[in-house]
Amino acid sequence: MPTVPGEPGASGLRPPARRAGLSWRRRLAGALTGLAVLPPLTLGLARLSDLLDLPSQMLFYLLAVVVVALVGGLAPALAAAVAAAALLAYYFIPPDNFAVGDLNDVVALVAFVLVAGAVSWVVGLAARRAREAETLATANAESREELRVLAGEQAALRRVATLVALGGPPAEVFAAVAREAGSVLGADATTILRLDPDGATTVIARVGEYQAEFPVGSRWTLEPPLPVAVVLRTGQPARGDDFTQAPGEYSARLRRVGIRSGVAAPIVVEGRLWGAIAVGMRRGHFPAGAEQRMAGFTELIGTAIANADSRAQLTASRARIVAAADATRRRIERDLHDGTQQRLVALGFELRLAQATVPGELPELQTQIGQVAHELDGVVEELREISRGIHPGILSEGGLGPALRTLARRAAIPVKLDIRTETRLADPIEVAAYYLVSEALTNTTKHASASHSHVTVELHEAVLHLSIRDDGIGGADPAGGSGLIGLRDRVQALGGSIEVSSAPGEGTAIVVELPMQPD
Image (cartoon, rainbow, N blue to C red; front, side, top):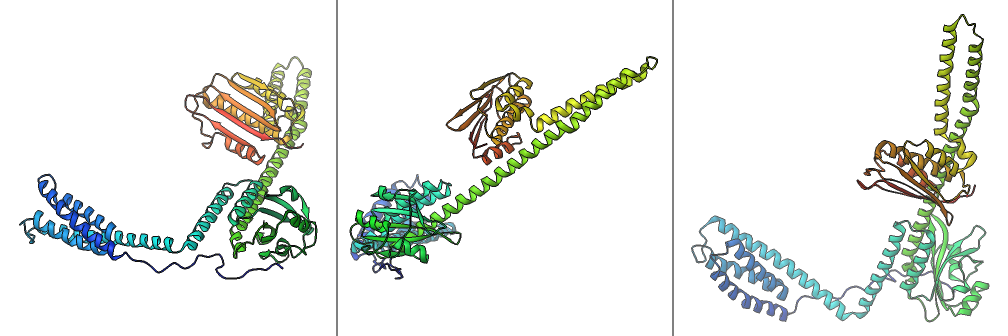
């Protein structure tokens, strides 16, 4: 029967061995090192006394003290520091004996002793810690193995955590978690299952042996005493070492492939039981604490799922906002075209008729009516341009190709169009592509000092590829008010990508990819 282990510290490290200090041989070696180093050093410094000042001489003695500390630890190093101070006072500080005449030299000598003592303490402590680590590693092979396992586990968790932090796709995260968890626990197979609303489970990821027996996407109804079934019923980790009496096809396949031991842990997403991760072994049993060691991986899975849900909700929300804005623009354009614009056209026609009926003896009136009609024609044309800017009617009627051709004809600079598809796309895709080209051409005209622009549109593997390039001065900053910020948001809301390259003197290139969407 599966059990839910609760032994404290089942997977923790053993307590360290007794703290080991340096041996008397090491201390003796340190003392002998001081005796061997200080006299020759003093002789050499005496010969170079004309070239070296007091701080330089102190530095050499300090290095000697460090060497002694590395070899023999704190006690020999302190003795060497005192001896070095005496040698400095006797040979290098006037009046050439143990007396010190200058107050500054007294301060320097005291500072040397303090620094040498501090360095000796630090180096001696480091040597002692190194000795303790050496003693621990030598005396306790089992603890050394536990440390290796823990390090491997932490490295695996870091790899998965990095993937989660980078926003990797859930499927990629699931596969990585299954692979890393199985490797850490020495499992023959690892499976991640999602709990479905009807109580069944779906295999989301599987690594290791016999993947064909439990393919990704397959659904199973699980019953205790399978550990994963216990987890999905209780929300607690579980293990099992005997599947001979477990019912169901899933258990039968486990027996057929030879899985004898299993451990499972719950996956919780925002307080809700989402599913479970299960590992299986053909030979032997999982060590105590395996369930707890899986907890770190399940937490990362939960974080990845929550992040993916949040990103999906954000993308869907942005897409809805973009769609609503496009629908509003389309409605405004239609209302202007079918309502206000048509009424103004009719009014202008009536003015022309009125002008024609004015008697010939009233030429001034005819002229005034003509001027009003002419001004009205200008208003209609401006309204038409505004309407076209809000949402070009030709885009809805003819599609992206005709709309871009019209846009290129009206551009203030020559535009070479390379349209390699005439396929009608979903409205959000066509609108985004149109306004990207429109904004890019506007920026080129205003800021780039370019002689021409080149627009390429092609459809490849259900992705619309769009590029706008010019031969201008470059140096455009997409974040500096160029008008591309809103378009970048639109592209990202549609699940696409946009890159802007604009090195000074090399022109500007905008490359966009928009995945196809259903109409």
